[in-house]
Length: 89
Image 1: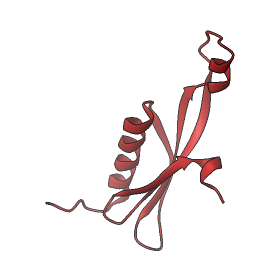
Image 2 (image 1 turned 60 degrees about the horizontal axis):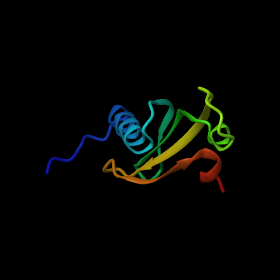
Image 3 (image 1 turned 180 degrees about the vertical axis):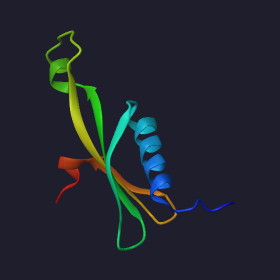
């Protein structure tokens, strides 16, 4: 198996593809940076249907802006992801 070249472009593509596949909405990358361990961490915004509006049973196109954080190993494997407010300690 060929190892992916670890560049910021590859990290951006990996993060975007992962989020769009698992969340189901378009992702817009906000930032990507290399970690001290050689991996990558990125932030992306995704607009999703408002769960609050849905719980009220209202029919509207209101979307919530959510920020997701995705962490990759140096081999471009996703090791964690989640909403920013849930991801912070």
